[in-house]
Amino acid sequence: MASLVLTPVQAQNPAPPLSLTAPVPVDETRARLEEETLFADGMKFMMTDEPTKALAQFEKLLQKKPNNAAARYAAAQALMKTGKVVEAIPYALKAYEAEKTNKYYNLLLAELYVKQKRYAEAERLYEDLLKQSTENMEYGVELAAIYLFDEKPDKALETYNRVEKALGLNEEITRQKQRIYLKQNKIDKAVEEAEKLVAYEPGDPDYLLEGAELLMANDRDDQAIGWLERALKLSPELPQAHVLLAEIYRKKGDMTRARKELDFVFANPNLEAGLKARILSSYVGLSDNSANAQQDALKLAQELAKAHPNDARSQLMLADLLVQQGKKAEARDLYAKAAQLDGSTYEIWGALLQLDGELNQVDSLLVHSQKALELFPNQGLFWYSNGTANLYKRKYPEAVESLEESRKLLANATTAELESLMKAVNAQLGDAYNGIGDHAKSDEAYELVLKDDPRNEHVLNNYSYFLSLRKDKLDRALTMSTMLVERNPNSPTYLDTHAWVLYVRKEYAKARTFLEKAVAADPNGVSGTILEHYGDVLFQLGEKDKAVEQWKKAKQKGENSQQLDKKIASGKLYE
Image 1: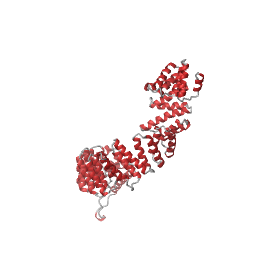
Image 2: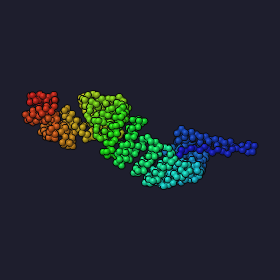
Image 3: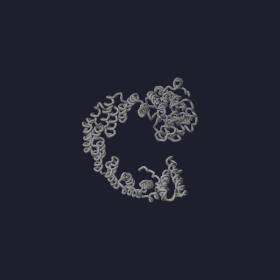
Image 4: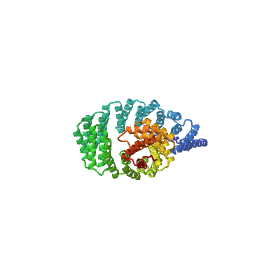
């Protein structure tokens, strides 16, 4: 709405010459001064953003002068500033009724009506304002907006046309009319409005580009070509025009002409590499996800990265496309290169660390997370990556330190993504604290995860296994491992965990059943740990020869626990 300007108190009629009239009574002069002082004080409070105090002054004035329109107007403003729209309307209405030709009174009352969604009443006020004087025609823009709120698009268009006729072409009005026509599916009308802008600034190719994009968005590619060719006559090297033409020809299946348009852009020596990368990004955004489109974009990105090996954005563009096509190892190397060229971009480090993790490149994850933290020390994700790498390297104190820092930074997480990361941090803290032997903090971290996510498989597995190794809270361990195998009946790792909990509880026959399931689930890929556990169970069940056989198989699989060699040599169980 238009900004509201406070009208000054109406000036009193000038006093006639002293020789022709009696002097003004002292009481009347004093009363007038009191009224002016109250109004002035109220306005001071309004200017210092203290509407409640201002209202008190205006109310005092209205007690003395109930019909003072300026005071009612000011009181209505003060009430509106405090959010009391309903209470403000009677004041604004009386001010307006007292002086209907005062446009500020009109505008304030209309604004209050709009806030109450009393659109019809606001529309009448604005229509009256426009009829009063052509100088008020600028308020037609606000009237049109109210018509749109009131779902009267045709009335809005009519009003916009009246404003344009009175004041001339206005870019924002033209765009509003286009939006209305597009919503009504009157494409030709929207294009006519675009032509008006072109005619208004015939030397500006941007309006032609906008018109072409409008046509393309409404499946009028052939018509858009004409607009783009007109733009290129004005500016032959206009990158966006060539990009849009490339997209049109690509959709038509004319890859030769599409590639020619893009080559024109990338061969331009006056365009810096970063701009070319943005143009390519724009082209990729316009393209569909067909295999041909993806392959074409990838080739262009490869050419760009090769032509500008020291431009971080070019490397980043290629890396992003490689990720989309599942070529993660190549992408990771390019992210690393981009980070080396320009480490100031958070997203580069985030993508790099994610791929380090997905590709199990632990050494790289450790190095890259440390470098990322030098630049972004307040990012919980980077501390988590560093903690994960240290945990994997069994550097438990360092892992605890990084993961605790991550937990501190994520303490006020509000998004689902960050809340999920917080669970991962606590899960890893459980592992790390167990690694340094702080079982109380380890259990506490695990329990925090299970409180919000009682089926978290990482925690159910590690927590129950570590409890079994400690021979502590075995009932709790059994509950968790049971839940785990019920949900994952064919997972060798989870079957082994459950079996070991049963083993510690001396339920050897049940443990044997689950270990045999674990071996059967993956007979060729079964781990040495599972085979050693199987041997231990067989020994407890009196099948010593079979136990030794399983221990030997565990040794062949690379298992090197402290007691394994002694078990094999002596044929006895050592725990």
